[in-house]
Length: 294
Image (cartoon, rainbow, N blue to C red; front, top):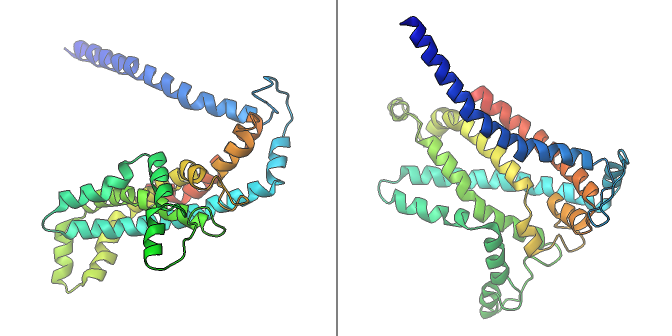
């Protein structure tokens, strides 16, 4: 009997390995392989059009950090990410708390809140570009009807970055809402009731009961939004193209403009490696918080 049980367990383990190995192989091919080649290409002058490359060491990285547009793009990306993530989490948490407090209409409200997040980024950028157009956009028409001058919300000097930021917050706040709303469902009602019996107000209950219970979710949300916001490309490319004069350019836009469009894949690879390192640095704090919480 014991031998049969051991044989059955061995067969089950073997079956599990056989089912897992193909998945691991696919993951390695789809993730590890491109990363390795990206790192290798970053040390070469590989040009896709010429089809030739040679080893140049750290030359691409030296050119990157000596490039004023790249430094501007890094600063734009970090600043944009910090502002967007903080605002999105703040608004998402407020929406989650409000919906969680509703007695009726939760499903309808959740659906309405999630609609912007369900749209593709390209579609969102095109819709907002038409709405904010200084020539025929509906926002311009409303301003004109009020006797106010038209304004170039996404293409003007000083306004482009703010316009893209607002649009990104509008689309991605629902993601923070959804994640934090799910976290709120795990907060014990008995703890809230006990706090209320002890005389705790809404703010005290939130600070001492709700916030500690959802801190892991907040850290996870911040990490995921940081990674995603760092990859921002479609909205910037469609709405501003990184202009004027690189004032709204992000790292991904810089890679596209100075690496992909010019077919200098070695230079573009070095940019992507720097971006990956920055994302890891910004995310490490969130990861530690999530691990300690769990």
